[in-house]
Length: 398
Image (cartoon, rainbow, N blue to C red; front, top):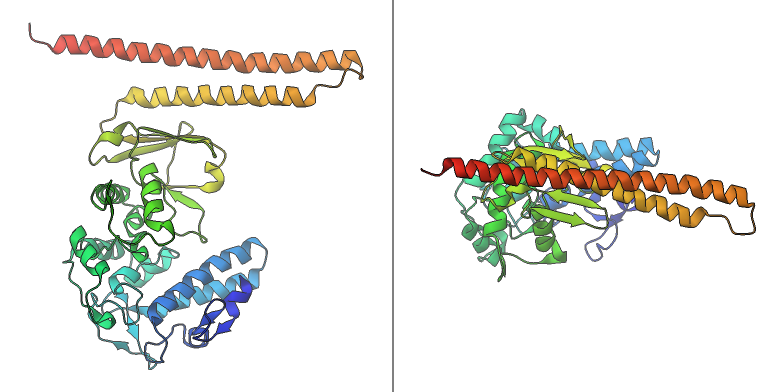
């Protein structure tokens, strides 16, 4: 990673190093008039890579390298931001910005326009500063999703299918058919408006995908993976820079079990057309933030999405199921340790008997807990059923 961060490359072989790195190091950006194609996108990609490598360097104790790359990353964002448009701009070697409509595709941007590349997720704090605060940044994002879906073909010289697909989606300048914008709906949650993210994600899931296919190219599986993660209510906006998973949209399914991580995701409001998140619970504890780090999620547990109007008993049942599942898991763990720790018959029989007795007691305790919790869940479900029937009969006319 460090080698790639400081290695120059030419236009004929960009499989290693960075083409245009000299300009990036000298000016903080790659000018649009020095003969390097897609200069704006390159600058932002270099800045993202610097931010990710800086984090890796910090973890490995390379403080000097981490600071150098982080500062270089911040400089790249500042260098391309055009105060006049509120977007990343076409910057010349003179330092001035070239006047270009924000909806122009190509030129210094890869398969998109300034709208699509102006909100990189790896440093939202810096973006807030550039926009003059959180609310102005949120306003600019709202504008992106509501302005007309007009476009100019720019350096493409002809209309390409990505342009048409953006217009057909009907979400302003948001072009879900291509990778540069996939994180944009989730920025609202990171900036404090989780339900704007919830509404947008549910709309995109229902309009940009169908059993017959989806709008866009399946480059490296990004269209399908976006759907899967969003359908689970999880998303990583800045991979490599942050391990945080956003809990910003109600899942499409009432219950999902991720076996590899032993995570159970529950969302009673999944069947609603546009459910609004009220609270999110992890292992029966309220999650105060809009994110959970992977290091926490990987330990396993129940993730419960509570929406406005949910039956309050639903979360109680979910908690009981989580406790029951945890008890069973612990019982299995104890049983596994028993099988692995029982001494052979050649060892002292008193030590063996004592070890077996303690293991059996631990297993019995875990089993009893599992049985008790399971019974409580059953009683809770029966009580709720009876209460609903009583209320239903009371509401019927005489």
